[in-house]
Length: 322
Image (tube, rainbow, N blue to C red; front, side, top):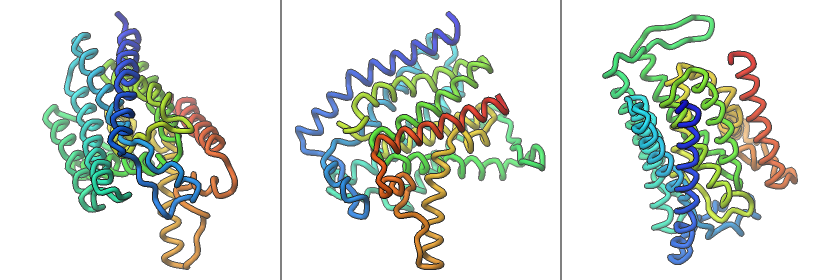
């Protein structure tokens, strides 16, 4: 069986598992009256979403993990790369699960404290570094205009920054029905293509497993969403993306492949700096998808435009660097 056929098996496996178990989670959440608390400072029309079940990411994360492990084992490719990817997805997913769980238990929009979440994110990144370093991992980091810099300290700092940064970036993008789901399908699809070209079954199967879970999840997450992915899904997706980009030895690609995630994060940073220094806001509301909502765009319009931007970013990267 070719690596592409095996990866499609992983995709179908994850898709089927998510389709089977997600409705059960939705039913359970409704029966226990558990739902998302919507931020008071968010768009007023989002208040009607209050009470929508959340933590849907738990299902597609577990489905992806199960699928990539059994397919990799079946193809005799259950190597350290697979475990690193699984730990990144599952590790950040667990952090998100704890965050979501606290929000639901205490019926509030705030879960883990910022320092607690950051500390846990850093710990997962360090665990990944330690596992990679035990296998003669190449700690050379390409710096634009400076070439490859061989520094363990610099590389470790970069990995921590990359994983923490992009796990939070995807989390910020998860503010509209289906937005982060669609963007993640595009990004993971891009890396699946790169992994296929490199004939790397471990990474290809991982990306396809995540895509399968996301496709099934979108059935229930598009507007009007029947369930949200929650931090359990968004933090996991971001951590997984950052790890994939590093394991493919193309970390900087994420700046284009994940261009929307970058812009969402940049909008928040710019807004905070501007307001604290000048007392004025650059955007009507951040993250930037809310800015366009405030301009009168529908959720579907924001979704589609942002998905297109993400797709264009990925196509540009593949066209230039392939």
